[in-house]
Amino acid sequence: MAPILEMRDITKKFPGVLANDHVNLDLNKGEIHALVGENGAGKSTLMNVLFGIYQQEEGQVFYKGDPLNIDNPNDAIDLGIGMVHQHFMLVPPLTVAENIILGEEPTTGFGNLNLSKAIKKIENLSQEYGLNVDPRAKIEDISVGMQQRVEILKALYREAEVLILDEPTAVLTPQEVKGLYKIMNTLVDQGKSIIFITHKLDEVLTVSKRVTVLRDGKSIGTVKTADTSKTELAEMMVGREVVLQVDKTPAEREEVKVEVDNLTADNDRGMPALSGVSFKIHGGEILGVAGVEGNGQTELVEVLTGLRKAKAGSFSLEGQSLFNESAREIKEAKVAHIPEDRHKHGLVLDYTIEDNLILGYHYQAPFAEGINLNFNALDKHAQRLIPEYDIRPRNKNALARSLSGGNQQKIIVAREFDLDPEFLVASQPTRGVDIGAIEFIHKRIIEQRDAGKAVLLVSAELSEIMSLSDRIAVMYEGEIVDIVDANKTTEEEIGLLMTGGKAEQTS
Image (cartoon, rainbow, N blue to C red; front, side):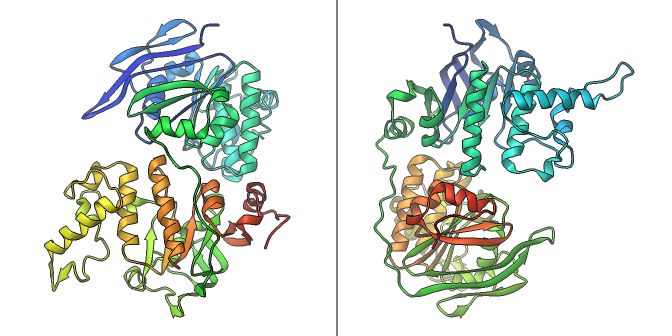
């Protein structure tokens, strides 16, 4: 049977970057085809070409055997190609139905909006594909997982036969992920075809039939999922053998280092974000914080690192109160911080690698001599850390802006870990980072734990929380609903807690 979709020798260039270099991809009818690769491998560019956001310089797209010229997303939608973006494109105050029909509003014979007709069609589609979406509900009142179903319905409403799902599980709980798998299988059973972009290799093996790997803008190969493994796919993605399992021994807990009690804080809109958060972290252990994003994790990290003032509570490190101290005073107390947004809070992109390696410590010896910088000390510092943390390129004068996401993150890790902190706050430490850099960063975090440091790990990746943490605190609506032993729980139990439920086995 001929593929429903083919992309042959697709080449896309940007100034100074060859994003796609004669890439090939084909999709069969009724197939889930995974597309994987490191950040910068060219996955999103390739899909943006298919969806008409970019136009290729070379190559051809074929749909149902016919060559296509897709000049914009409207062309793709008209042809039956839909895309569900990683960041949802929904208007929160509007209802599900109003979001779905935007741009394609049905009208009566008198030119008036015929919302009831749209609602009926949405209800039929929802029932047919097992989406269970209420068309009258407001987007702002439904869960993230339900919002994703709305995005899928938007594509189905426009009669899409090919769906591109870009990192669709990034913000879902384990239960919602299983629900999505069921929906995807229902879609292909009904004759739809899916291109599934993900960086989670477990998902590739669970849900796809074939997988295409990109590396450095090139097609490395397409393999049947049943004939491959996580190890093989990781090696294809990176070009070398990758250790996928976090290698760690049981924690050797020391005395309590960090104590947080009854912490209360508001978010940027003045609404309650933390409501009586309390926990302790021993030296030599990692406390993971799990939760659907937006449940207070960001505000907790900001309070602990001096970026946000709390309204009440206490926070101390080794008996020293750091409650509502400045970010500088908290750093001087040996609290290291890997921020969730490296561009906003971790780097100055137009500074060099050398300069970024001393940010926050630039006024301290040996980097400062009075009001002047000691450039010899800066040079020695950079020349030591760049190879030690495998920062590429090795040029200390390269601008941070010119580096990949993984190497930008390595600058932050090198700077913060070299402080020899007593308390490490790691927020989304591997977000947007390549699989090889993830392996490196995980190893360094475990080294901090094994050196007797206290570590707070906040991550939207539940697999990362499960593999690195010794105990896991689950946050829901600004509260810690439970703290469980990582070795005595499951992803399903954590997922239940993340939605405000109760796990069966906790400790």
